[in-house]
Length: 326
Image 1 (cartoon, helix red, strand yellow):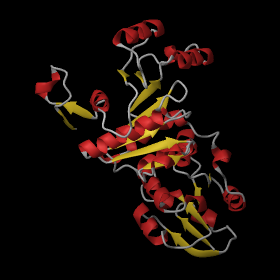
Image 2 (image 1 turned 90 degrees about the horizontal axis):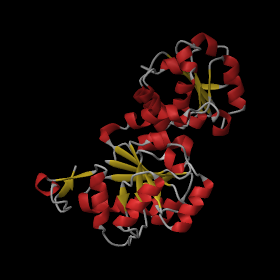
Image 3 (image 1 turned 120 degrees about the vertical axis):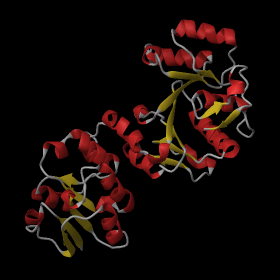
Image 4 (image 1 turned 90 degrees about the vertical axis):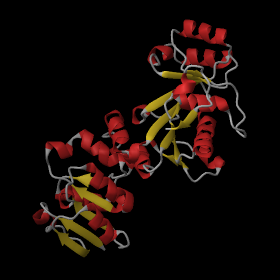
């Protein structure tokens, strides 16, 4: 049986010939709709978006997407330029809402042929969502992405070590997300989750209570969803040669970004040579680390990216013992 919730589209949806178990008319807050239907079984919900109070604020739609099964919801949109724009539809897709239309025929079609992400992927503009995702994370969460530039540069293990350092030493609540892979499963940590790129925005919002959210970007193009990104390079000769053969302009594209040498045995002099040859700057140099013990080098990195800061008396001498939680 189906549910119809209508407001401005009341007359349009009155012509829909389907079995209905519950029919509502008017406007309701997101919380009211969640309370009414979170434990209510229905096959499909046809939801006139104008029935959601203050629907222009996408956070109200996000609330519904996190509490109800959006795969069962068909969202009927007014045929306005704003509601039909790629930017607005991209926001819906990022919440996992793939079934939306502006007319009755579209509703009828989606009842029998619900969309998957593949059906709407061409609409989504990930770059236009990038600022929106970070802006919508409540509570001041820092969203930091880590991305391998050379093959197997260690992003997954580094995220695990950074998370452990922030939690165990500084008592922060830290969550981690990996995109399009399932390597986090081997760490046996419920706060390290896997998702697909299309659902990154939704996953970030679910973890909004975390002080820090670390994202293993892998091959995704969601760098702009993060407030900061560390680009990892393992600077061995073979890894660098493979990288340059694959993409000779890679360092031009990384100009001005935070390049981190990971699993690096380079000396200070070697790093200067690397910077000269690559015409770039190194943000930080991380030697091979034991993930079973605490590493002060990570504490220093966390300070450099602004997650921790040094007390005034320790700033000049370069020590890291004056670090405290931000």
